[in-house]
Length: 89
Image 1 (tube, rainbow, N blue to C red):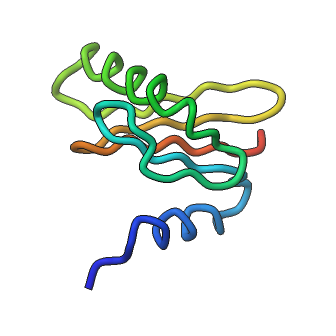
Image 2 (image 1 turned 180 degrees about the vertical axis):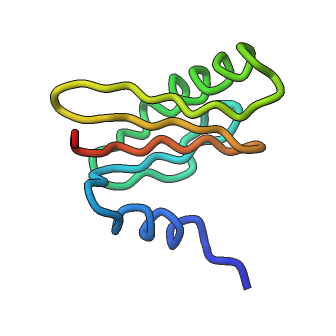
């Protein structure tokens, strides 16, 4: 039986350094958010992932935004985009 979305996000949240996770659909609707991830940013995250795919349609890009406060990893797979907030390493 497949895990629920919240269960998957809980697994991601349990990883070392992860402080937030956001999951959205292709239209930018927040499906779920945990920790520091704000569901209001779901549309922006989905748009960013869709634009990155246009750079090379034959790959699935992973976007990494770095700041002093956190790192943000964004990846879109199929109809779902996931953004992970991590503490800088």
